[in-house]
Length: 90
Image 1 (cartoon, helix red, strand yellow):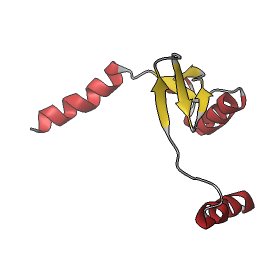
Image 2: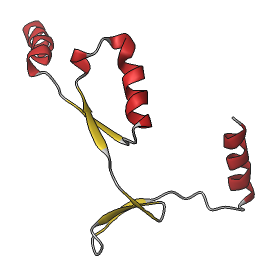
Image 3: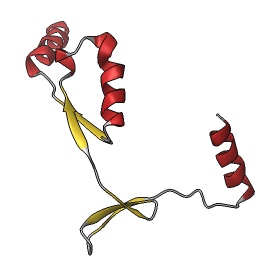
C-alpha cells in the first residue's frame, strides 16, 4: 500500500513522468514497454482440467515462474450447448 501511495505522490508532484506506452519497434524486431525492451513469456492453462478453487493458485504460480501472459482453450462443445439454448429461445 505504501509503495502505491508513494508512487502516486511522486507522480502527482511531477517528479517522475507517469506516461506509460507500449509499441513495436520494427527496426529492432522487439516490443517496447515504457521505454525498455519487453519479451512475452506465455504459458497455457486448460481451465477445464483444474478445479475452480485452484485457478487463482495456478495463475499465481505461473506468475512466479516468470510468465506474463496466459493462453487458454475454449471448448466449443461446452459453448455450443449455451449458444444452442439461446437460439432455441429466439
